[in-house]
Length: 469
Image (cartoon, rainbow, N blue to C red; front, side, top):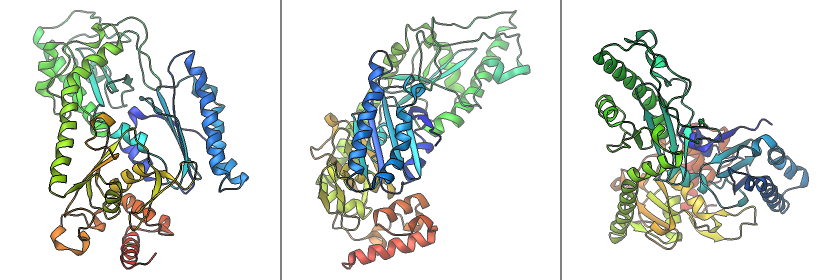
């Protein structure tokens, strides 16, 4: 099996969303572990991985024959023996495997060690990274070159620019330059930068070197503006629209004015960093400056979520009871779900009633209830936000804001015109319908077309309401 390793910082958009929608056929194996970027600590990474694979093996042995377990574990063991892979670890590792798929993600965040065998992938750590509000991108630009960084309050890596993004002014303008330009091999790198799966330039800082005889100042300004326009279009098309992250501009003050005047990127923040990264001592210094820009926005958003939940609960449109939220989730009535980033609750959610059966993670049929709640809410088009424990407005691990009505006892929106704002089944994507069908345990769902999925889901729900199944 060919093992594709992806860097999650660059695959948090449609690629990851698509992966998470592709529900593997049970059993689904999920493995998470912290890793190290540096020696000698990183020598322990493959050893820890092998121990977690053994935990998966022990869980599989409870329900599956040896030959079937060996087939499921084969790609995990192949990865464990891949010395080249272990030389390029980042801060964390996520591995998802089933009979029909195998995904490996390097993570920019440390994750606690976990090995789970269940009916679906354990995705909350990935969702936490994807839904985290402290992620951002930094666009570093000067008259000669451009570079892009992505990270969070803890780490920052340089991103490999998409093929359609010009790296230098020569790439962007070519023969249309109005002055003789000559670029050097590396512009704008931060001192000491290196990465795993991203492109970083090592060594001392490289500032732009100007050669040749320049044209008039206004021609230089024209070249700069045309270069900035080309970069703005390309970054928006190939990076911002995909990642949907706040974009922080790092440039000299005069370049801020020019770039902001021509930019059409809606993700560009109004405040930026008034220095080019080449003038900074390290990549960490750039991260610190970027977080100073983003922190007020991040904290304000957390307060907004907590306030929104408090208002909803005061009007009987919100709840923090795990059982009540589960009942609302299976009915598609949760508009926004806040989930504690560091909480895990082993158990299963009944697909039709929302009743929670608690258990232990050692049981292959048991997953994290909070993880399953997040999948359910997302499958109905709701928003899932994974929130640090210290910012959760509740102590139960969940806080739900309902889409309509008064919570779990509200009528089914498909049968009550008063709640017409709920999306009809036909409005959902095939991927979302498939997830609903999986939740309802509808057999043969993988071969169904959209109309068949809609009919089967309605039939299963009706049976559940009348005591069937």
